[in-house]
Image 1 (cartoon, rainbow, N blue to C red):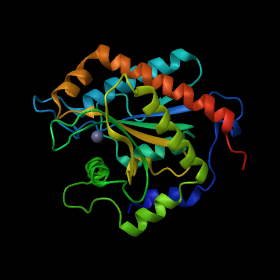
Image 2 (image 1 turned 90 degrees about the vertical axis):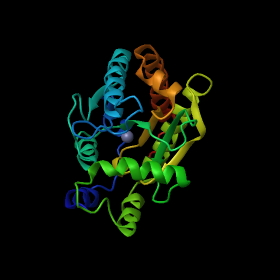
Image 3 (image 1 turned 90 degrees about the horizontal axis):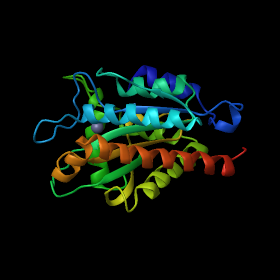
Length: 254
Ligand SMILES: [Zn+2]
């Protein structure tokens, strides 16, 4: 348990909604996974996850800004290490309307391929989701220290997520899945849930996208290719457009 996270969580109880933040353009916080001394997953031929997540994040920022509908911030724009709790704190301090973490998978079975989208839950939807969350949460563990938080604290943090935030997160995941279906490869049951440290801001709808598996040759080739990444970015931009259009339509008032 980290004190900063506990303090921040205790101070935030209300959901933030675009409609409640005046007519200002919504702020999308993009979170390219890993960075600096933490390469994330490493493909068999040596490509780092941190490089692909940053390249995709920068391209997505450009695409979102081009729509004229959003402000965009990023948890990192260079090859630097940022703690998971630091990423959460940035989204909270910036009053982000949406948080999207970008990652690549590293699965034991090299035949598995495709993107998957995760939302926060104190209980993982399945063993694969639990394993992925465990891998991604490992970024914050300095050598010799205990990783993460106790199950009790994790459960409390997850339960702080407001109903509006949960609905927003689920919508975002569904919009991404819909925008990818038929055009971007998806893992079976691509929308899963687990206790990801980086999704624990209780007031910002958030999802973590695993863009594909670096352990699969086809996915690795796709993720390394700037033109195929541009296609992925285009569909993500469409998903975020859908999210905010639907959100404005169905935004809860309570
Ligand atoms: Zn990752």
